[in-house]
Structure formats: C-alpha cells, structure tokens
Amino acid sequence: MSGRLVNGARPLMRILKLRNFPIFDQLKLEELLLRTSADNWCLLNDGTSPPSIVMGISGKPEKLLEVERVVKDGVPVIKRFSGGGTVIFDEGTLFVTLICSQSALPRLELYPRQILSWTEQLYVPVFEKAHGFKLREHDYVFNDRKFGGNAQSITKNRWLHHTSFLWDFADSRMGYLKLPERAPAYREGRNHRDFICRLGEHFPSREMFMDAVQKGLEHFFFLQEDSLAGVDGEFGGQPHISTTHFISTNELTVCTAQ
Image (cartoon, rainbow, N blue to C red; front, side, top):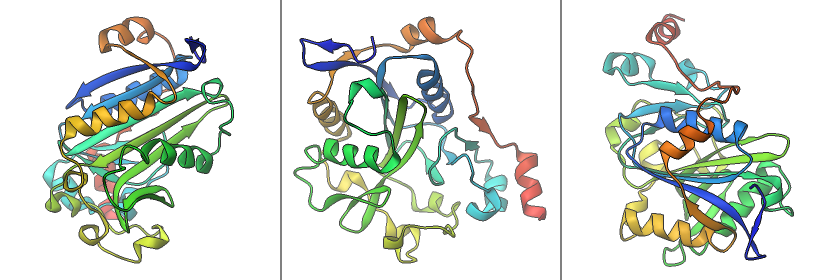
C-alpha cells in the first residue's frame, strides 16, 4: 500500500491513536513498523505511564543522568533505536511519530535536516494561533524555549520522525537529567526550567492539539485509522532487528562507580 495514491492525490497513511501507552512499548512498535511494514504510519500517544527516561542510541548514562538519584527512585531507563537527546516522559508528554516510505513524499530527500524542515511546514498551521513557533536546530520552540524534541531514524527508503511534546511536566523530574555537554547553541547554558516550556500554556486542550495534527497531515495524506490488535495480527510475528532495550539497574550502578 505504501505510496498508493487515494483519489489520485494523496498517499495513504495509517494512524494509530493511543492513550497512556508505555513508551517502551511505543518505541518497540515504532521499530517494528519501520522495519517490517511498507506503509505510511502516524502514531499519536496521549501521555505515557510509568514515567521513564529515554536515551538516544549513543547516550551514556554517566554523562547525561543523575544516576544515583535515578537508581534510588527506581526510574526506568530505556535506550531507543534512534538518535536524539535524553528525555523523561510521563503523563504530561504527547507523542507524534511519523513513519513513511520515500515514495510518499518523493521530493523529500532522506536527510535529517530536510525531514526536520518538512515537519516544520507541517506544524506551522497547527500552531498558527500560538506566537513564536519555529524550528531551532533540532527542536520545536516558542521563541527561544523548547516544547518539542525530535528523534529520527532513516533507512534506505524509509524514515521515522518521533516527536515528544511537553504538554506539561514536573519540575522535580527534570532533576534526573544533567545539562548535556553537547547542547544546542540557543540553549546558552540555561537550566531545564529556563530552557523548556509547556505546550499546555499555548494550546486550549490536548484533544484539540491532536486533532490539529491530524488536520495538518490531511494536507499530505489520506488518513485511515487502525488498531493495535490489527497491527499485531499483521506484523507481530515478523522477524526484524530490534534494538530498543532497558538499561538494567546493575548497568546503571556500574556507572556510579566509575
């Protein structure tokens, strides 16, 4: 079905709407669909539980986390299959993941910056009533404060763009994260509280935001809603590379001893 035009105009995109879906399961699902499906997908997840820390594939806990506090509080730490920064996700995080074949948007070159630039075009009408929206380096911001972070994975002819939007967050949980050595220039050394902001302060409701994202996608795709059960039945048994995993307490404890 990938790239198939509907009504002679828009390629088909299958959409999954999730609520409080565990982020570990979501990342595993994303990797499954990237590697085994030829279709275009959008995953919308309204919040996640339990609160979890997710690191990019090359992230090092001792450099990015307050490891002793993370271990003491028993916060799960996950290594995802894609790149990107280190974040803590919880019930206040909204997720939008796009998984597409190259044929869906044939003029889009499969490079990180080009994909980011296209997503900025996608989100401009979503945030038309909020002031100061733009893409800065690899983040979505209102003026100079981040509310959306991105991770990507690109294969030979498919790409994935995963975004976590901070609808709300607990200041105390941000304390699990260190100031990264490699941070975007526009951060200018600011701590988490001064660097990030809440999407909920700029949008009427979570439901309206998710609806606006779908309407934005409809300019490019014909959306067809799907179900977890349907996906599991169609793709669940297919062998594929799967690298998303939990970092064990023992591995984290070793980091504190170094």
